[in-house]
Length: 467
Image (cartoon, rainbow, N blue to C red; front, side, top):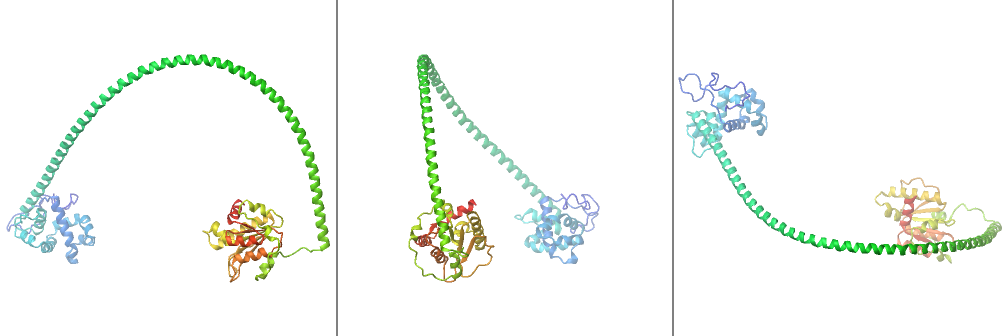
């Protein structure tokens, strides 16, 4: 095939008079011979050699159509610029001579041999043909034809080798298929023998099943006769049961009448007890009113926890007598609602102990905000006093507005929240229910000695989740 692609319309065809004169043409010859038809590997090698030396040429020696191609990357230069390179090699003998000079310099001994018109026996015929086309020594067309014959011979050898390989593969597959068919035939013969044996066994089992069926049918007839007898007995038993049921219903009606009389008597007794209880509560209430009037106590404006929050001083007061009786060794979450239902209850919460157990993935500011907001809901629902204590040497920033009924305290420098909680408990009067929520064992033991009700952090977290 020609050096250029078939779509290069400007290239000379074989026999055309527009072909460029050859470098090795005989002196005094007539019209120049046409460009030879190059094998595809030779054409590709010529383009590759030209593309490799193209960037090394001076800019004024590079034809205008190839100046843009010379700037391509090496792999793109031979692939995308092949048509333009082939056209310039065919149409511009001076450019071909410049390229040939650099290619022969890089080819070394092989280039020198090609220039002399000889081709080493061990040389690649494609390389020899490409160098001969560029250098065009005496007999260069014969070298290209010999290269084409060698390429075609190699292609024919490859085709023959491929055909031989395919034939060998088909023969191998046929032999394998025959072996598999023989194995399958043996398996089918064995399977047929096994099926015949199983068929004989099935026939024998069928005869046995027929005998069993006849015996079963005989037993079924006897069972039907026994069933008819038992049905008669069951009918008689059902009649007897109906009579007994009627008698039981009569006795039940008598018992319900007696129970109605008993309920009426119990209701009357409860009425008497309710009257006594009302009279007792009324007496206690009037006594409390008289005691308040006699003592002339004014309504308080500050609670004991407010004094602790204001003073923030260590208290040396001893534990009031009898306060230990208020302690409860229970950590049941259900107890929280019961304790908050007591009159004038005070809920004290170990802040960070609860937040880090319930929602520790949040920042401290978000933990405080979530806990204080939830405690505001509890204070609004129960009307109880609520105090939450956090560790901190100074008041933190970013606190939300404190809800009504909730007191927020921070321990001072040198004092922990646990110590502040114990001071709050000691400040409460004996008899007032104080509930301390903390999972810290030391806090629980300390407030229990002062008569408070210690509960775990889970009880409050579940109560907040339910709100």
